Length: 157
Length: 283
Ligand SMILES: Cc1cc2nc3c(=O)[nH]c(=O)nc-3n(C[C@H](O)[C@H](O)[C@H](O)COP(=O)(O)OP(=O)(O)OC[C@H]3O[C@@H](n4cnc5c(N)ncnc54)[C@H](O)[C@@H]3O)c2cc1C
Ligand code: FES
Ligand code: FES
Image 1: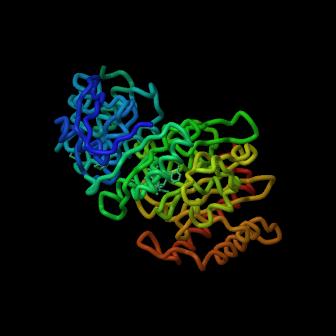
Image 2: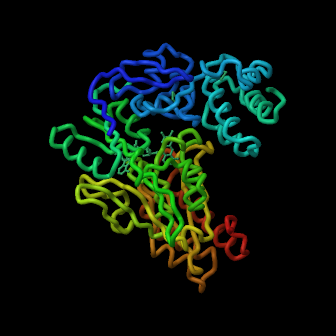
Image 3: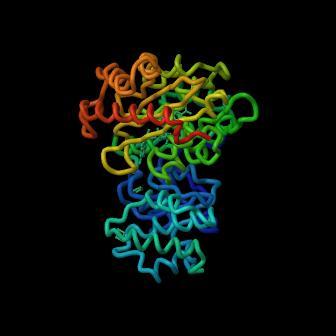
C-alpha cells in the first residue's frame, strides 16, 4: 500500500527527469508543478475541470491537473508543455498561428500532442471531441484544428 | 488548493482497502473512497466537503476488471469512462460514458465515482439499470454481490464501509440493440436536460433517464405503457410522459413543462425508429 500521511518529499517523473518535490497529501498536481517545480506552463483557469488550461499528460493520457492529486501521479510519467519543445505540434501552432493571447495554448498543445501520439488517422469527429475538452477565450479554434490536422496528416513534421 | 489536510492511501487489494478504512475510521479520520477524485477535489476546494483521508481504489486489480469471456460483461469500478468506451464491451454504456463531461475528463472519471456521485445525474447508472446489473462490493466481510435494483434506489445506497469493486451485466443485455439520446440546454458538453437510454431485450423496450428528475429513473409502469401495442405511438408517449409528470425537474436547464415536451418527442422518435427497424445503434 502506498501511503502519504503528512508533508513529504516525493519523486515525480516529469518530462523524462526525476524531480523531488515537497508535497502535502492534499496538494493538486497543478500547484506542485507550478509552485513546487517551477513548471508554469500548465495554467490555472477554472480549477473545476471545465477549461482545460491546466492539461498535462500522465502516461501519455491528457489529464486536467487541477483535478488530480500529486500523490496520484507518483510512479507515473508526467509530461508538461515544457517537455514539448521542438515537437511537430509546437511547430504547427507557430506556423499556423494557432494562438492569440496564448493562455489556453499549453492545454491545447498537450491534448493535440496526446492525440497524435495515440492515433495516426483519427476521424474528424474524434479530433473535434478531443479538442472540445478545452476552451479558448480568443476563439482560435479554427487555427488550432488546422494545426493538429497538419501534424496528423504529416504536413508538419 | 484544497484548504485542509488529509491523508492519501492507495491499497493494493480489496482486503487492504477494507482494513485501512476501518483503521482510519477508528482513528477519527473520516475516510472517503476515492475513484477519479474529480468530484471530491472540486467539492473539497470550495469547502462543500471535508474528510481526513482518501482511499484511492484505482490500483486494486479487482477494480480494474475488464472481461466478457463468459456469459457476463464485468467492468471494474476503477476503470475510467474512456477505458470503458474504448473496450467496446458494453456499447450502450460506452456511448453513455462518451457523453459524460468531456474527453479529457473521461480519462479521469471512474465508473465507481459516477455511480456513487452526489451529483444528481449519474448517467453511467442508466445502462446498468437497463441491464439488471449486479454490483460487486468489497468490505470487511469480503466480497458481496447485490442486484442493482436492491442497492441503487434513486442513488447508490451502499452499506457502510463497503465500496464498489465491479459491475456485471449479462451479455444478452450488453449486446442488445440500444438508443442513447442526450439533450442538453445549449452546449454539447453539459449536464443533461434529459439523457434517454434504451435497449431492446427479447422484443421489449427498456428505458431509463437522467436529468428528467432529481435522480436516474427506470420505471416499469412507463415501460409497460411504451410497449403497449394496442395504442398508437403518440398516445404511448403521452401516457409515459404523464406517468412521469410528478417527478419532472424544474431548474435553470429547463422547466418541467419543457422537459415533458422534449420527453414526449424523444419517445415518439424512438418508437418510430423501432417500427421502421431503424434502430440507430443496432449492430
Ligand atoms: C467537468 C465535469 C463535467 C461533468 N459532467 C457530467 C455529466 O455530463 N454527466 C454526469 O453524469 N456526471 C458529470 N460529472 C460528474 C462526474 O461524473 C461525477 O462527479 C463523478 O462522481 C466523478 O467521478 P470520479 O471517479 O472522479 O469520482 P470521485 O471524486 O473519486 O468520487 C465521487 C464520489 O463517489 C465515491 N466513490 C468513488 N469511487 C467509489 C467506489 N468504487 N465505491 C464507492 N464509492 C465510490 C466517493 O467517495 C465520492 O463520494 C461531471 C464532472 C465534471 C468535473
Ligand atoms: S483549470 Fe483545470 S480545467 Fe480549468
Ligand atoms: S489564445 Fe487566448 S484563450 Fe486561447
